[in-house]
Image 1 (spheres, rainbow, N blue to C red):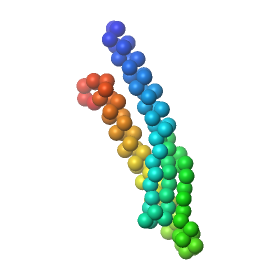
Image 2 (cartoon, helix red, strand yellow):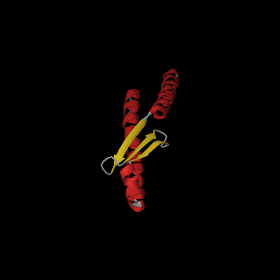
Image 3 (tube, rainbow, N blue to C red):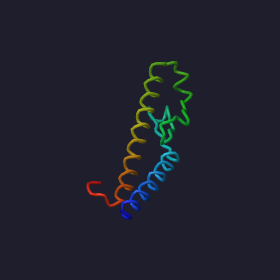
Length: 99
C-alpha cells in the first residue's frame, strides 16, 4: 500500500509539473510567407497576432481572414503536439505498463 501511495504522490507532482509547463508553453506560427504570425500559449490563448502591413494595404479581406484562420489552426495543432510530447515523457517516468 505504501508503494501505491508513493506512486500516487509522484503522479500528482508530475501532473502539477505538466500543468506548469503547459502554462509556460508558447508556440509561434506564420502563414502566407510570414504575412500573418500568431503566438499561442499552451492553454490555446492567442498571445499576439501580427499582420503584415502589405497585406492590409492590399485590401484583400478574404485572404487576410484565410491566413489568420490557417495560422490559428497551425498554432493550435502545434500546441497539441507539444503537449502530447511532454505527456509521453512524463508518463514514461512513472514506469507504468503500456505508456
